[in-house]
Length: 274
Image (tube, rainbow, N blue to C red):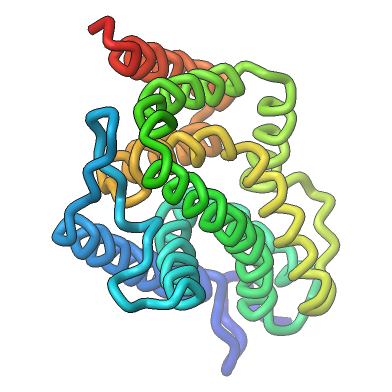
């Protein structure tokens, strides 16, 4: 009989597996964070396009000179994936580790590969979100360039959108999806590890709950500035706190109060009252 605490020769123990998992996760986070910073810096160096209404439109929604629209869309989507990895990995890692542990306890093969499949399924949902966001943002940017009257109303409209996103933080839909995300991070004991297909579908479910839970905050990021590193950091910190803090629903409400305040400020400024 194998003595307790002695690792089987040729098979890494739990401690080694944990260090390997954390090491790979740290490398992914560092690479995605660096890529996000580089992308944001390149967008900032290009500046923005002045638009009627006293605001500047980010060049993230527009193709570079001579760049076809499909290439611009692919470039945006690639950097969206990198950005969401940097923002979401801290809150996703507990769920991935929990899945890996369950696979190991049930004697499943290749737990690291299955955990990676969960992550791929999860981020494929966020990729779909970005794929839907770009044509909408590009269409609105084009309308702002062609219609000065609409461009002038954009700051006020942005404030209304942020206000609605803040109110979403107090809804039952937000609470339900947040509870699912927190349950996955803490481990609910109902995981059914299987092959890569099962892991992929589990990741898709996690991603769907996450997108529905974080849709309001991500819309705020898109409205305020998708290339703004400070906005990214604030939104990422809010999402992580909602998922991992002891009282996540209270954190969500506190975040909602802050977002509502920002929305009201933008409305007042956009209406020319402040």
